[in-house]
Image 1 (cartoon, rainbow over the protein chains, first blue to last red):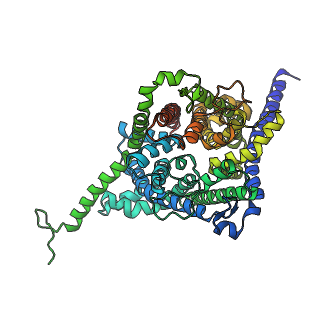
Image 2: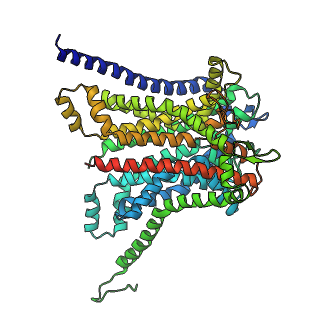
Image 3: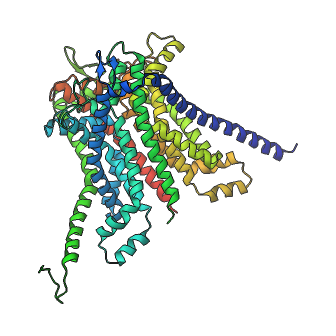
Length: 289
Length: 309
C-alpha cells in the first residue's frame, strides 16, 4: 500500500474514532438529562395527590400538602412579572429602536450581558442592603420581587430586543410614511408583531426566577408560616426554599413529601419554559417576512 | 366648540401636537429604562462596598484576604477568606474538568456531525437541563451523589469538593454547549467546503479549520460556564459539607464563598461586623465574576463582528 492511501486510511480511522468520542459526550449529556427527569418523575409521582397540592403542611412540614407554598411562589412570580415586564420591555425598545451607535450603547449592552452573570446570591445581598434595609421594606414578598426583578431584567431586555430586531424595517418605514410618529409606529405596528417573541422570552426568564433560592433566602422567604401572605409586605413560603428546607433542615421528612415537592417545582418550571421555548421556535419558523 | 392649537398657516394641530408630546415623554422613559442596567450594575457595586466598609476598617481587606482561618463566631473572631476562596476554586476546578471536555465534545458533535432533527431535539434537552432549578440539582446530589461518592471512594462522608464540583459541572453544561454550538454554527460553510475540497476528512476540517475559527466563542462559553460555577450557591451549600478549612484534596469537605454568605446571613445582626464581613465576601465574589463575564463578553463581541454577514 502506498504512503498516501495509508495516510488517508489513518485519517479516516481517526475521524470515525472522534465521531465516537464526541458522540459519547452527547450521549452522556442526554443520559444525565434523562436520569434527572426520570428520577424526579419516578420518585416524585407517588407523593402527588389532590390533597398534596391543596392541603396545608402538617406535623412540622413532614405531612400534609404544599398549597401555601405553591401560592406563595405564584404570587412572588406574578409580582416580579408586573415589575420587570414594563422596565425590561422599555429597555429592549430603547436598544432595538432608539439607541444610537455609540460608546454609551456599547456600555449598556456590556452591563446587560454582565448583569446576567452576576451570581444570584450577590443579587440577594444587594436586595437585602437596598430593598430590605435601606428602603425599609423589610423582609417581604415585595423585597424579594424587586430583587428578582433585577435578576430577570437582562433576560427580558435581551429577548425584547431580539424579537424587535426580527421585524423588518420596511414595516416601520411604512408606518412612518403614513404619518405615524416614531412611538406610534412602534406601539401600533412593531410591538404587536414582536409580541410572541417578547412574551415567550419573558416567560423563560420568569420561570428561571421562580426556581431561584439564594436571593429569596436573604430577602423574605419564610421557613414556615401558618397563614398565606396577606399583602406584599408580608413574608411568604416558596417552593425552591421549601425544597431546601425539607432536604437539609428538617429531620425525618418522609421521602415522598420531599420528592413530591421537587416534582411540583420541576414540573412547573420546565413545562412552562419548554412550552415557551417550543412556541418561540414555531413562531420563528412561521413568520417569514 | 373645541379649541385646538394651529400653526402659522392656521391649520389645526391638536392631534399632531399631542402625539409629538407623547413621543417626547415616551422617548425620555425609554432612554431612562435603557440606562437602568448600568445604574443597577453600578448600584450593586456601590452598595456591596458601602455595607462592606465597616469590615474593611475594623479588620482590613488585606487581613481578610490573607488570613487562613474562618471563625466568624469564635473568640477571638477570625475572618480569613482564604479557606472560602480555596473552597470555591476547588469545586470550580472539578466542575471545569467535567464541563470543558464534555461540553465542547457535545457541541462539536451537535454542530458538525448531526442532522437537523437531532439538533432540534438536543435544544430541548439542553433547555430542560438549564430550566431545572439549582436547588433541585442540590437535592438530587444529596439523594444520589453523596451516597455514591461515599461508597465509591470509601470516605466517612460523601459531602466533598468532588460531589459539589461534579454537580456544578453538570449545571454548567447547558451554558457551555449552547454558546460553543452557536460559535461553531457561525463559522461560514465556505471554510468547511474549502477544507474538504483540499482533501481533508471531516475531522481534519473540524480541528484544523472550524474549531480554530470558533475558538474565541468556545472560550467565551467556557468562561461563562466558569462564572456560573463560581457563583452557584444552593447546590454547593447542600453538597460540600461546608467545613471552612483549606482543603488538601477533592475528597475533603469545603466551604465556598457563596455557601458562606447563604448559610451565615440568616444568623447575623444586620449592620454588625459579621454582616459587613459577609458583604466583603460578596464584593470579592462580585469582582471575580465581573472580570470573568467582562472577558467573555468582550471576546464574544469580537467574534460576532468577525463573522457578521
